[in-house]
Length: 321
Image 1 (cartoon, rainbow, N blue to C red):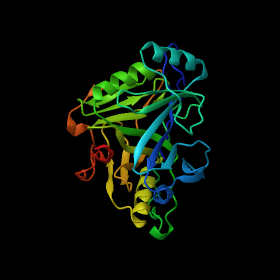
Image 2: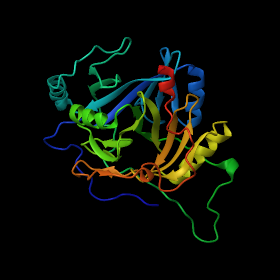
Image 3: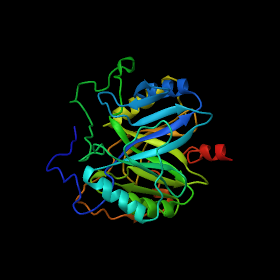
Image 4: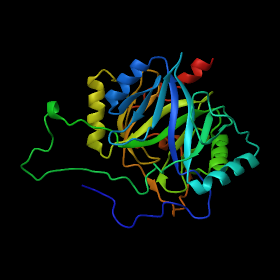
């Protein structure tokens, strides 16, 4: 087993203002029953909440995603969390930049403040517990001595479940503008990019290589949500279980260059993806990560199967037309 040990880095970067976590997000889909089936199969704790669904990881009461039913699949809003002492300074900074604050969406109970990003995506900033990790997440590779069988029978493969939401990747009409806005407004920092096609951003108070990423498209939308699994074997078993339940479309297994994580993407019923992920790079609060601008061949993967032709197609943009 491989694990990260040693001194834990500071969990707050002194003297600088920025969100510490992407707390939750909300989207609508055409059929809640279909969503329930997909995310239960994926390994999440799906709970009925009012007229919608709440998505949790087992053993935690933190809601990572809220889903409601509407005529089409659509990303509704993102919710970011700050430390209590940073809430008012963050609000003042955003207002000073000419960003107009809005009321919370109808039916949403909130003590945070709300605004639109330049592309019309609703954003909430609120005080909440830090859910981004304070150190690199453990990563396990288990083997056995010679003369012993390591793999269980397929019929006896364990149930695997995501440990936490790792990040989301959004479509955006303008990647450079997204970098500028999210850096200036909520203090995210650029980790890496590939020209104006894709970028990855991290939190300044210690986070994975990216807790938010953007890929160029004609309109906003959700490309994928990523879930930490803790090991390669867990990714493989998760992918197998999804295929056994009929969710065979996707991409993986492979390994990314930017972020370094191992991955398998499962396509959901609406054309976006849920990613099983493990061993993503980590940027401590006291680390000044040197961002890079990489060629397109490095923006997707180091190794893995051929990319599906519609992997970066924004089906939400079709709905907007």
